[in-house]
Structure formats: C-alpha cells, structure tokens
Length: 270
Image 1: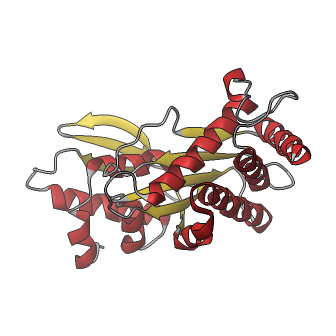
Image 2: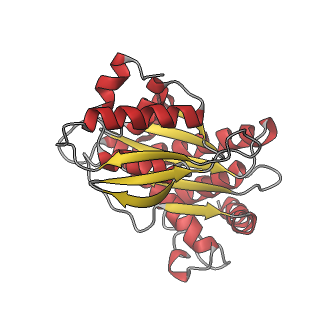
C-alpha cells in the first residue's frame, strides 16, 4: 500500500526537525544513525501477531534526491502504526507555523478522557484570557484537537500561528500556557523559586493570581477523580523560535495532589 499522491507531495515538504519532534512526543525512540538519517523504533501494542517493533528512517537532509520517497515511506509506516490515514498523520507531522501540545494519558477510558478534555480546554482558556480576554474563546475554538495511539494514547492540541511582525498572538497564548504549566510543575515538585508564582506553601502570593488559580485547577482537573497521571509535552514552530527551560512535564499522582492543593489555596485567597 502506498500513500495517496496528495499526501506524497506534502510528505516531500516535511521538515526533519518537525518529524523528529513528533516521533519523540508519541512514544517512538531513537535507535541508531544510518548514513544521513536516523532509525526510530516503536514497540507494537501487546498481543499483536507481529511482535517486532515498527521502524522508520528519518532522512535528515532535504537535499537528498530520494528525500520525498523516504518521507513518504515514513508517513506510511507511522500511519500504519497509529491505524490512521496518511492525511491525518500529515497534519500532525507538519509543524510549519504551528505549536503543538501533546498529552499522553496513563489511562484511557471515557471516564478518563472527559476530565482530561475539560481540563485541557480550561488550561487553554486560562492562558488566552491572560493574553486577550475579549477573544479568549476564539482561541479555544480555533485550536485543533487530534488523537493518535502508538502503544499509548496521545491527545494533540495544534495551534496555528498567524505570520506577523514580532510574536504572533497565538504564540503569546501558547507561551503563557507553557509558563503557567512550568510554574505549577516546578512548585509542585519543591522548586522554591517558583513559590512566588504558584503558592504551593502557605505564605506565598502569586504575582498573577487569576492565571495561577485557573492553571492549577485545570491541571488538577485533567487527572480526574482518580488523579491519573499524564505527561504534557510542548513543541514549538521553528518559524517563530522559542526555547523554554523544560519541554516535558510528568504529572504523577503525587504531583497532581500538590497542584490540587495549590488550586484550593489560590481559590481560598481570592
């Protein structure tokens, strides 16, 4: 089976860095170097007939003559592993003018998905309100939500950036979301420098109390009643360079407990 012609043309325009970000976020692991490329592997789900891992070759040089063919092969393999069509996978692989937040859930059922989606919406809304309260819901409605399953369930939230002079407003929102998550996470794991922003311990007051309160509440809500753990991973469009201090956040049940406590403290302070 080969990818459709339209998908083949778009696959040829994929950038290696974008593909590598996607593979790292969705459970693939780097295997070995192979010429001017890298081999990445993914273990199949338990119980499948073929126990051997999926393998893709990521070409790292877009000047290669067979670059379009190699990217098309990669697209076909990823689509097969995720049991999706090539066009939907392409939308996730192509990060041109788009920031993407990946949410890897430790448990995946209707009971887990509902609070995760609600919390994710509230997280985006909190950041959007902090940037532009009047158009906050427009940002939330414009975010594209997707799903992939490569051994573990992964939700994706794709934010398309509007090319502009300076920082696009959509990037201001995703950056604010990131800064809120960073502050909450570091405070929850005991980073005292974060306490001034997210008061996990009594006696501290947040410099942006509304944002802090809403972010903590959203993160706690994403874990549901059972406080099921999850991972957040931020990836940034290379068209608007940004390098955060930390890209991946592992919210374990213990960390979620601290975040929930912070949300209550902030609610009581308001």
